[in-house]
Image 1 (cartoon, rainbow, N blue to C red):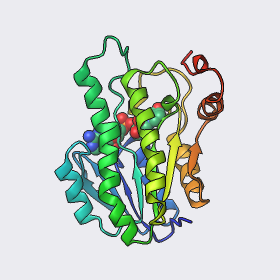
Image 2 (image 1 turned 135 degrees about the vertical axis):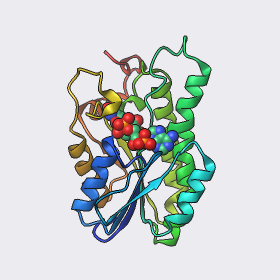
Image 3 (image 1 turned 90 degrees about the horizontal axis):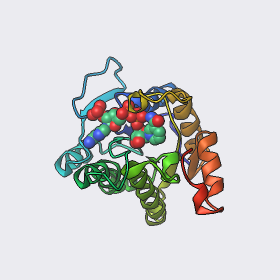
Length: 231
Ligand SMILES: NC(=O)c1ccc[n+]([C@@H]2O[C@H](COP(=O)([O-])OP(=O)(O)OC[C@H]3O[C@@H](n4cnc5c(N)ncnc54)[C@H](OP(=O)(O)O)[C@@H]3O)[C@@H](O)[C@H]2O)c1
């Protein structure tokens, strides 16, 4: 069971968007310290927030963070990019690779670097931020990257069970951040996604379905594959 009160937490991409909402929620629930990363970090006014640099595409950057943040017992693997959302047939392979480099290999680098840290601190939790688009056709390389990340999380859950780490996969649809600023469809409030996710982690969940879109497409996985598409 994971308790946030008094815990030290890492939130990748924690200085804006959904990551910032996680940082605020963790502080409200009594986290002792929260490492909030950005590629160009800005100092925080809050003494419980450690503003720190991270580029998940850079192995040295991930390793440096893991050397610094040795007191972490909860990792929120939130950093991601929306690039590569167009047609797969006309996608630039370089753009598709860049999307996977952040959303899949970046997240895996964090998991690899922090697994020993979590083990040393009692097991703790690894929380991976996927998307409803992990399960829905039509979102190009972005959707494919989130499907790969979902699979990776499910294997990490098995691999990290022995060290007592709670591995949580989070699925959400449109949520009001910079990533979807041009989307006009209804969006989740990131504060509610963060609050519901942190509550579920504390309750021992291994999966969080943050909204109706995520719940619908999870249930549709057992139906015809043609039903797993946008629109
Ligand atoms: N918003 C949605 O509708 C939605 C829906 C489903 C899932 N998600 C997922 O939710 C997560 C957060 O997204 P968001 O909506 O908050 O998007 P956002 O507002 O665009 O923020 C993206 C975050 O990822 C970080 N990031 C991007 N590339 C990085 C890199 N190479 N190294 C380290 N950090 C990097 C950014 O940090 P910097 O400050 O350094 O740029 C920023 O904090 C993502 O994994 C996204 O795929 C979002």
